[in-house]
Amino acid sequence: MHSTSLSRKAVAALLATAIVGSVAGFAPAATASSPASSRAVADFWRTSPHVQERNKRVAVHVLRQLFEEGDLSVADQYIRADYIQHNPMAPNGREAIKNFIRDWHARFPDHVYNVKRVLAQGDLVMVHSNPVSESGTRGSSVVDIFRFDKKGMIAEHWDVVQAVPETTVNGNDMFGTVSQPRTNQPGPRWMTPFSQKVATAYFDTLLVDKNPDAVRYLTPEYYQHNPTIPNGSAGLREQFTNFFQQFPNLIVERKRVIAEGDLVAIHAHYRLSPGDRGQAVVDIFRVGKDGKILEHWDSVQDVPSTPPLNDNTMF
Image (tube, rainbow, N blue to C red; front, side, top):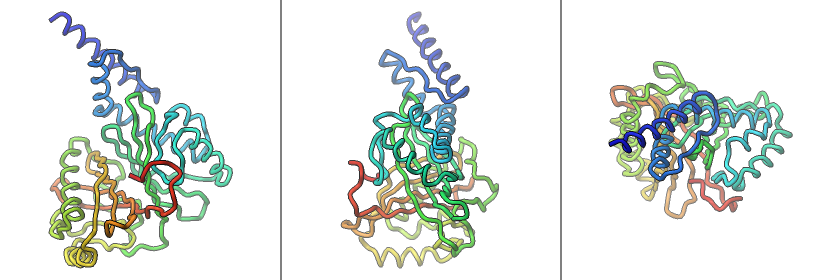
């Protein structure tokens, strides 16, 4: 009984230290030496809202400091040396990032990252942004996904990049929020499991099972930010039916989900047929308290045909 009490106190003290470190600043927390304590810390890093908020701040800080300021010191401070890269145009490793930023910042010294929404769940952080490299241009719709290790360092990165078009058929831009309340911030965390269940059920029913009846998960107004799709759920069942008939060999593989509050991001590989390289897509859904999906954003990128500069896929 006495030894159990001491071990609990030790773990509690360790977790308290981690909380203080994550709230006070960006510094990674200390790790424990015993296997049991190490597991407790690993679980803590995956589930603690304090740590997830810290990771969100770090992800945004790193993106802004690198791309807007050209500050390479943040790479040394927050990115692992053996950083795993899934962007096909970049090699693995922290030094590769630093080399890329040196060239990028010299070419685009006025680059602005324009972060729109940030979600964190477990060890993953999703950042949805409108980076603009040259003033007066529309820039890109970019989703960055970072995986943090238990020391609070960025260990892995995926992204999807799409050029922002001049016009949209729905009248919405690719980034704003139309549904109420009009905020880009995720809703309360108690909604997370509910929102994730609704969004993944919709996604899997529609795109994995190819069942057009999935439109029952949508509100009538269903605000759309994909520039090629109109607002509203009316008529979508027929459109999806025709699409699935046109592409009967469609394959959509859900790779990872990041949910926070009323927002759910799903990273997936879309292919029209087994031999198709396909597209990397991140769909972002906003779920209402009634269990209906209110709004949708996405970024879509073709998987390139040229060999990647790393040994990883985009997924």
